[in-house]
Image (cartoon, rainbow, N blue to C red; front, top):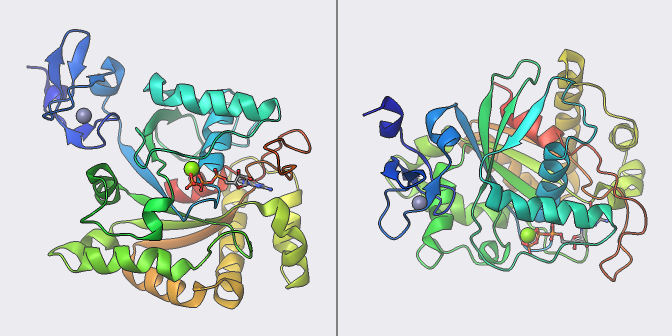
Length: 320
Ligand SMILES: Nc1nc2c(ncn2[C@@H]2O[C@H](COP(=O)(O)OP(=O)(O)OP(=O)(O)O)[C@@H](O)[C@H]2O)c(=O)[nH]1
Ligand SMILES: [Mg+2]
Ligand SMILES: [Zn+2]
């Protein structure tokens, strides 16, 4: 039997780790009740993988960030990952939706809110990024409603499994937004308590990274300026530099400035920062705008979609 059939990989349909079984078109998931087909290139080119899970209350911008990031990367739109960077989809069904949503945005239409709690993750292969060996990226997006009352015993098993598998948690927060519940510590405390109450839980957390991503930066600009973060506001407006050492230094600088902003101005920020610094492998901050402009309140964009800094959380997630 080829060695790759013994490699446990993540099944995009059920969100569990599986060793592939032979199937009609190549391979299928071995888990009872799933049996989904697995793409041969996914099974046979077993690249190292990074699992990224989006965590955040409803309406904070998880789906639009993933739509802008993955839709534009797969589309080959201009980005600062470098000329040789190649991003390819592995499970076309999950990506069809992302690409449809991205194309809707390019026509000025907003995609609908995330209905089902657990969605199949999107998997893509990235290569040719300076300093980052080829790897598979696996993105989970869930409906934020599950975080409003995080109860692992009552939550869909796919979501609990997602938390266990994630290498990086993207904590998605629309800071200073009166329309959405923004308490950062509440978002993570129940999950951290639950995990550390199990044997090995504290060690599991110490292997995970946290990247807080402040969304809807187009709405934050003037507040950032007023509160003494004009450097961060300028960073959002400037055109992104290509991914190189200097860019990485700037990312870390901005991350530090946003840590300061978190502890001073974000509800639940100081407790969150202290807890995540102590519990997780690393804690970084980024700020993005998936749209780059405001919506008109009727699901239309007021200008052409113009994402800002959406590659930053990804780069913070892939750094060693
Ligand atoms: N101005 C502005 N608004 C945004 C941006 N991103 C998201 N929004 C607004 O926030 C709303 C919610 O964004 P979603 O990405 O659907 O939020 P979500 O976190 O996926 O929400 P759930 O799926 O309900 O958990 C959108 O419909 C937009 O109105 C942005 O970059 N700029
Ligand atoms: Mg969503
Ligand atoms: Zn499966």
